[in-house]
Image 1 (cartoon, helix red, strand yellow):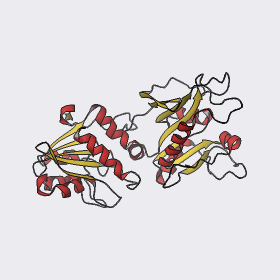
Image 2 (cartoon, one colour):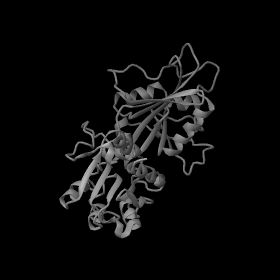
Image 3 (cartoon, one colour):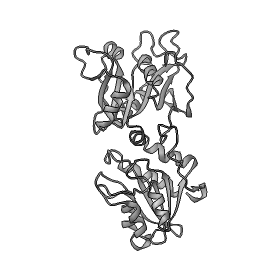
Length: 338
């Protein structure tokens, strides 16, 4: 395991307690030995770099800091981490992903101006660092939630199976509940709300909190359906959700809603569970699109008897202009340096 991979693992210890902040991990290394570790534990408390420096003490001087997100350069709830790194005498910093937020960005430039060597991870580890905070990065750069479209379909591409409530297997359905527990909000369209009356809760997975449960479409809601109704233009409604702190949205509606989101450029990630079944007829994953959509980072894995297909429409860290948060003029760290 590389030192940056260790920092990524440490960052996950803050998952669920740092919002609205991202998760961040840090490792300090001197002469090939780890001398300090830390992660951002809670909003308003010291950041990962500061915790790692505190753990290292005087051994931080002359060390290399591996941190999953660029040290902040502004005074917020805590002092700027970039200055803490400089004051500790750290010689070099390797960062997994840049901070795109307007106020906090610029930490690496500040380090370089102070004589600290600063590099940015590239390749797979760089992607993993951006992926780790994909919802937060989208929330910051695009002022809307990161949207994941989840669907289950048969091998012939149908979203319904005659005389069966479920397409996917038990393992896949449990994973969906875990995804709900990890999301700030879950949504369906009005057609699904009326036909299935879904609860959209995260069940039997030890969820610490329940997501907000939404319906996009024209009302009224069916009697007994306890979901929030959003009837305005999708872009405006997602903007409103972002202002209310919703960073991640799991879309579970049918092809009508998914097509509307895709046509508007509002789907970032696809999760498609493919079951070893043939339906013969029924709705498909999406309706007709105005033009083809290129998918990236395509991956597959087995979940029980199903296959989970994962792909990105918009990779994490992309700005609305299409520029990546990797585009600043900074040296890149090679694999041997991570």
